[in-house]
Length: 263
Image 1 (cartoon, one colour):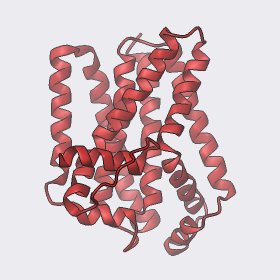
Image 2 (cartoon, rainbow, N blue to C red):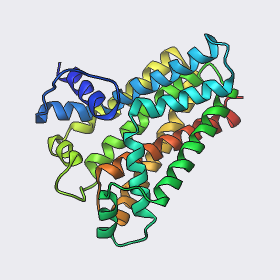
Image 3 (spheres, rainbow, N blue to C red):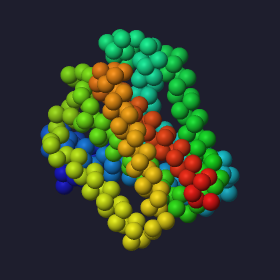
């Protein structure tokens, strides 16, 4: 039951899906929430894949429309919560200020020019990748699309727990304090299950999964080092920006796989 409540907490915090019940926010449930970050991503990815399949197979609309529907679904489903973090972190990063000043900039509710420009680049890049994937769609593309947020949310969980907090208060600190030494052990179990299921049912996606893992790991290691250097630690905005950055890199990876490995 705690696992289900953990997923529901994630849906309340990180998506726009209405969950009209009051959920417990004690340490045990918040820890389950962290453990189920990848499952939240799997739910999101499944919705993206279903939206794409529905537009391509059940409507008369073009590939461009289908790509736009998936692109828009990503914004609507998350409520733009991570995009807000991306803009705030971009404003802070491109200010080229000291760490303390960067944290002040991220706390400012106003959005600067760098935040606007960076989100335009992010969203346009994502749309390009989605559209070309749709044009070159392959049966296994739907499964790999479903796994994209699974890996980006896994990166989010590791960064949350393995990078020190830049502030003593905030939502990130609340989640961090709820974690135990074994909280992240569920992540490699998820990956092992994913490989086993793939090996039994659909071996064609194993290459894609492996590449996603490599890209996610490189992104994770790079961000873990750079976040400390750039900001002195993790904040909610930086965590959101990391999720968006990781996800667009995975979309790019899938785009490249369609060109060079899924022809």
